[in-house]
Length: 445
Ligand code: GLN
Image (cartoon, rainbow, N blue to C red; front, side, top):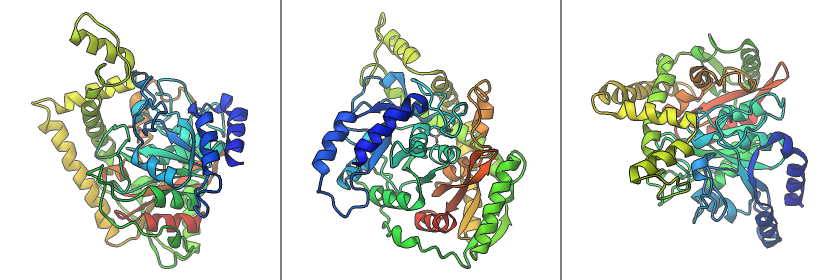
């Protein structure tokens, strides 16, 4: 059956792809037995599911890609896991990721690096690279990822699959290991738009366990997939089609825009005047929040402890050993930005620019239904290409970060190949209009 086929495919391919941090073979087989004949009618019933390793799974190791959580086995399920299990989805394992979600290539995993199935010398993207590579390889049917600044959409684009980041607050973050709490969202990575709609339908909705989850009605996403986008107004920000975007990527996106026009949409150019500040803003706010969220890894409450001569020495040895370089870099950036005397100059300023970026989008959405552009400025790059200079790595998220700062829903769908590698088309919607985003993606697909 489905789980056997998934486990077989993992056995065949994962020594090359390395998408899984853990395959829960026994658990999956047990659940498959229990599920037999039970969840009839549910579209997700018995589907093999891969879960990014920063999402708590009861009794199954959850490391967030970090050595500091090497031995952490959660006592409870994240809300999204509860919901997916109830729908009959069967988790076959936990997916590799950049440590705590910090990265765009999986090269920051504390364990090993996942490879891109289209070219094993290239990165799968990140931080949900394991999730995207596994779906692309056919190891699993659906996966969960998390997206703080692009971590669902960019790996989906690099691996030629569909990835949806919901509106901030649409999906419960209860049981998601926090990176930057005002940006983090869980979402599906799937082979097609319909599967993304089914998965979102299952995980969306208000959760009393997450005070930032929104009490907004969840529509029927499947009924949005009509294929009809006649008269729909599509905005294309010129800043996302200009300098810094690879020509091959631009070409494929332009073709996609023509196709949307052929389907009856009206495509027009617009501007996002504050987008130049987005990456700088994100790299103040996300590390600031991360430095605070990561303070809990002190050798007392979770995971790793390295003994020292006294308490402070123990904290210091534990954190020096357990965290990787990128995580340390972010903690230093974040504590600096939050320290007294610098708070107003950096953190507060960044919050103000975040508001300006959100308003840029609001203005566009007064006149347009969706905003469309590339998901990433390049296709999948080679291992080691961007590891020497963190800034060039950060800049790979230029197309996704503004959307995260504005809290908007966005999907990446495959839109052709450039030199044999997949290109992603990003479709961005109004707050809580995942239905609109899915509709356009489905019509295009
Ligand atoms: N690549 C970005 C970062 O390193 C975004 C990661 C994410 O969305 N989790 O922060």
